[in-house]
Length: 503
View 1: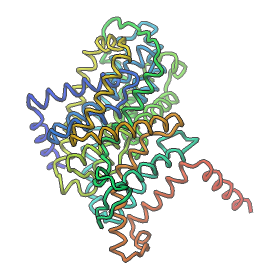
View 2: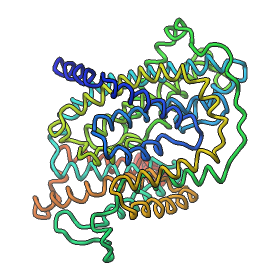
View 3: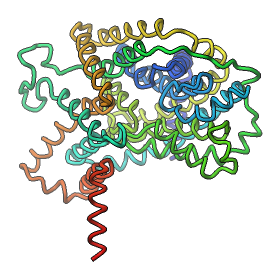
């Protein structure tokens, strides 16, 4: 642990430069803007910027992406409070009490309360990330190709939880479509061409960054442009700085909400949208003023905002240690790591021993910068919310294609953005979520290569998949994931159990 603190301090020292601090302020401010503007999601922001980080080093790329991630999740509370529309799904619970408080003339203090809660949640998750990730990485070093293949399967199976509870099969279908897309190109083991159809542009596979931009950028632009609504922005009156004494009184609530956010973040595929509602619900059930929830409870705002930003650090833990994303945003961030030749997962601690501490340092500094900017830019963001989507969305659309072209200077990548974007748009119309497809595209090659290596090592014998302790646990986790996401299977098992116990 002492060595870990030394490495963290070294990473913080490396971060303290005019370029590093300036980029951190810029990225968090950009994230706040993305989060505050309804229609610009954190996933889309990270996906767009991933392609633009191709020509900068991994350190600055991480600063940019993590800063935008942290800022976007926190920024969603601004629009939730002022216009009763969450800028991101992570702020959906915030508006339940945030907007009623704004209507009572407390918009300023409520935004300040949300800003400080987000900062504390992010800071709390950084501490857990710093402590837990190295321990989990040491355990992950015991993984062989068998365990990595099963882990990739588990990552794809969680796709059902990225859609509505009623239709997990749509998440699985979306994930399998992504899996099929990932198989396009030359097989890395034998060199055999798959789904290329004599097109030389497909020999190297489809650019996953172009796919990410197409999945999250184009459909979002089209959806916002076709459903414009007039916004009524509640004016900010008074100071935005909350009373420190009140925050100290609610420290138990903050710590509990932070812990909830981190735990939910660690669970693969769940993310900030779930964390904010779970924390809000628990806060409501345990509060002495539960009658105020939904009518203007400050505790509700604290619980939701602390949890959703604590989920950021929590979601990075399985990403770094296991290579499995904890949220849709971290699913896109896997692509950013791979773009810079860094493979998240069991071997990360050996191949890039400082990356965990670099991420922890960036998250720590981003938390501090978030608190500063969130309070100082609140009034400016209120003005920004009045900008029409008709002005912003064409700029976003242009950035989608520029980001894709910048990676390989390829017009074909721009075509990939267009066609994947059109596909994702119609899939979204039918309630097929894009995040599972992103997971399938990223985890597909990992699953394919490691499964085949594992079978080659065992001469086609699948028995080791069930006899090794870690692999057996992962098999059981895959089965549990399928059962847990399927209401039909749970109902059948419940009925079977009743028939057995009634005899």
